[in-house]
Image 1 (cartoon, helix red, strand yellow):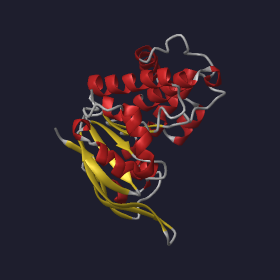
Image 2 (tube, rainbow, N blue to C red; image 1 turned 90 degrees about the horizontal axis):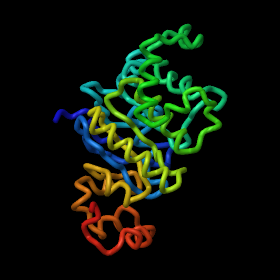
Image 3 (cartoon, one colour; image 1 turned 30 degrees about the horizontal axis):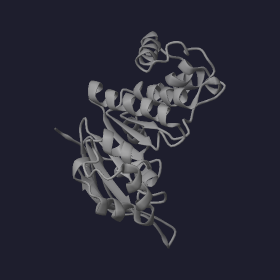
Image 4 (tube, rainbow, N blue to C red; image 1 turned 135 degrees about the horizontal axis):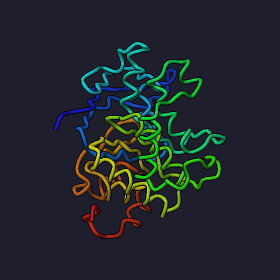
Length: 264
C-alpha cells in the first residue's frame, strides 16, 4: 500500500519552555486504521492539529499525499484540507442549523466565499448528503435542528460532514470521549466500516486502550510528546502500556483483564 502520511522529526514548542511534541516520526499507509493512545497532555491533540495545520509545527516535515504540508501557502493549504476530514470530540456543529445543513458545511472548502456565505449547494451535493445520512442511520433526522440530537447522533453528523469532503483521510480527535459506551461502540463501528468500505485512512486519538486495541490495524503510543510505541495491537505488552501511561497504567491494565492477547 502507498504511504499517505509521513512525519519526519516533527516538533511543537510553545514559548520557551513547553514542548508539546518532540521529534515525532511515523508514517501511515492508505486505508490504514491507526490509533494514537496516551495519557491526557501527552500531545495527541497537538499531533492531529499539526497534520492539517490547524496549528503549525515548530520543526520537521509533514508529507501528506506527496506534498510537504508545512511549506504550503493559504490557497494550497485550503486544497490540502479538502482531502483531510476532521471529527471533533465536541462535534463542532452549528446548533441552530438542520442536520443536512451541517453536513453540507463540509463542502465549504470547495466553494468561493460568496457561494459559501449564501449556502448555495448543487443537487449532487444534496444527494450525497442524503446518501451519507442513510449510511450513518440518520435518514429520519434530515431536517431536525442539530441541538435536538443525542451526542451519538451529533457525532454521526460530524462524520457525515467530514465524508462529504471526499477525503483521503479522517483525523478523529477523541471522537468518543463525550459518549456513553453504547454510543461509543456505534461510532467506532461506523468509523471502522467506513475505513474498510471506502478505503479511507483513519488516524484517531483515543484515551480508551481497550477500544484502540479492538479496532486498530496499528497503535502509536505517545508519552510526553514522544512516540514510545509503534506497532501491532497484538504485540503490545503490559510493560509497554506502563511506558505509555506511567502512573495511570495500573487501572487501564486492570480494565483490560489478564489476557495478554489484548486485541481479542
